[in-house]
Amino acid sequence: MQIIDGKAVSEQIQKEIAQEVQKIKEAGRKVPHLAAVLVGNDGGSQTYVNHKVKMCQQVGFESTLIHLEETISQEDLLEVVHKLNENESIDGFIVQLPLPKHINETTITLAIHPSKDVDGFHPTNLGRMMLGLPCFLPATPAGILTLLERYQIPTTGKHCVVVGRSHIVGTPMSLLLSRNQKVGNCTVTLTHSRTIDLPSYTRQADILIVALGKPEFITADMVKEGAVVIDVGTTRVPDSSKKSGFTLKGDVKFDEVAPKTSYITPVPGGVGPMTVITLIQNTLLALKLKQTSLWI
Ligand code: GUN
Image (cartoon, rainbow, N blue to C red):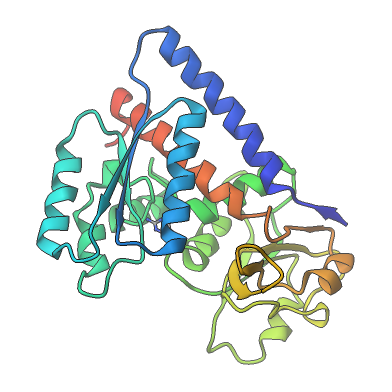
């Protein structure tokens, strides 16, 4: 059994991007610029956005954090999005989710120009992904592809079972792994809350990707000997022994599942670190697509 070290891979990619940005600077060209919009004071969202902005600084990108009041109207938030769409100096931006209840997340997502949508949430990017056109891939599934690639885990012809059909993880993941690409060519089964006899599917998986947000849901009896297990879950479970007051728990019961696997991602330190670095990769790509007119 080998642990897939997402922290180490993300640090390696961070170094590679920092070197590329250094070269851009030395050539006197524009460096990538990411903007992040944060609405309100949700603790988790603040932490995530801070990580994203800090990572920009670490690789030499420009970054702008726009922190707005919880009470901002949808109309005013749309105005902020329109301004970012028009701002030439900003190559890509994100609006951190979830948004306050009075704001329609779909309306905001649709307002972001697809060429700046480095989260890859806009329908244009999701459609382009399906057609294999240049696009921004959603960070979590793209980060998982990177892990499979860097660990040289064969995917062609393998049976991949995805648990969870969310728009930002399970559904795009199932599509990406079924594509005719180097990391792809899997036979994919997408399972979800209405699947009957889930263990009968998970036990068939050569590659099992779990993204349902239920701590320790996948137990050893649900996993085939030698499977590759990718755990996307990051649920905060109260833990008074921790300074933060919580422990991060994955969707996989790691201690009993790990010995059966060929590869497994831990929580934390597996998929999580890959999502931030993938956003950074997407921002660099946004600048390159703009400069080379590859966005057709
Ligand atoms: N909230 C949780 N994950 C994400 C993400 O990847 N992007 C944005 N914008 N919001 C999120």
